Length: 333
Ligand SMILES: Cc1cc2nc3c(=O)[nH]c(=O)nc-3n(C[C@H](O)[C@H](O)[C@H](O)COP(=O)(O)OP(=O)(O)OC[C@H]3O[C@@H](n4cnc5c(N)ncnc54)[C@H](O)[C@@H]3O)c2cc1C
Image (tube, rainbow, N blue to C red; front, side, top):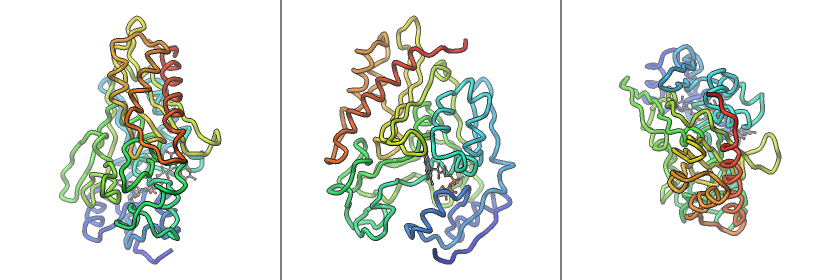
C-alpha cells in the first residue's frame, strides 16, 4: 500500500471539487478500491470519502413512474426494501446473490456498478501483460487461463469479463444513471451507455467525465418488472462471481411475449443487454423452442478462447432456464 491523501467531502460540491482539482478517487464502501490498492493494481494519490453524502444520495424512492436508488444506498438496504421485493424482484435477486452479507452491508450501489474485472492477469501485477492495467502491454488472458472470462463484447486487446450482478438488472430494465459534475451540473444518461466496450482502449471502462459523481439510478416502471428474475450460475452456490447469469423481465399477454427485457452477466465485457434475444421473443408464445431460439440469438456473436469455450452453451442454458422460470412465475396483479 502506498501513502495517499484522504479528503472528507461533506457536500456534493466539495466531493466533485476534490475529485476534479486533486484528481481524487471517490471512496464509498471501499470494498473494491482498497482491495485494488493493497494489490498495487491502482495507486490513487487522493481518496475523496463520500460517505457523509448519504443524506443526499442514500435514499430509495418509489412511485408510479419507477424507482430511484441513491448511489450511496448499501446493497443490503436495497435488497430488503419492500418496493424492490414486491415490484422489482430481479433487483433483489441480483443483490442478494452477490458477494457476502458482510460485503453487502458495506458496499454501495454506486461502487457496485463501477467494480473492476476479476481477471487474474489484471489483479496480479506480477503479470506484465495486461492492456487494461498497463495500456499497450498485451493481453496474457487471450492465450492463458481464460475460463472465467468474457465471450461477448471482447476485442483482440482484452477479454476481461464484467463481474457484477446488479448492473445486469439495471441495463436490462432500461435504467438511467444520474451524474453530477464539478461545475454543479447534473445529467441523466442511459445506464447502457455508462460502460465502454474494450475495443483498443480497454483501460477506459466508462464514459464518465473525470470527477463525475454517480448520484442515483432511475429504473422506469413497466408491465414487465414484477415478472422478473435473475439466475446466476457459478462454481460455488454462494460467495462467488457468475460464470453465466441471466436477467429476465417479461410482459406476457395470454402467454405471448408482449415485451421482454433480457440481460446477461458473467459472459460479457460490460453489463450486457441482449437486444437480439428480446427481438426474437417478442410476439411469440413463450415455450421451450422460443426460449432456445432467443438464447441462440443472444450468443450468436460469441468469441471464445479455449478455456472459456463452454461459456456460450452455459449462457444459453442459463437464459433458457431463466425465461421458462419467469414465464411460470406467479405474479401479483
Ligand atoms: C470477495 C468479494 C466477492 C464479491 N462478489 C461479488 C458478486 O458475487 N457479485 C457482485 O456484483 N459483486 C461482488 N463483489 C463486489 C462488491 O459488490 C463490490 O466490492 C461493492 O459493491 C463495491 O461497492 P463499494 O461501495 O465498496 O465501492 P468502492 O470500493 O468504494 O468503490 C468502487 C469504485 O467505484 C467508485 N465509486 C464509488 N462510488 C461512486 C460514486 N457515487 N460515483 C462515482 N464513482 C464512485 C470508486 O472510486 C471506485 O473506483 C465482491 C467483492 C468481494 C471483495
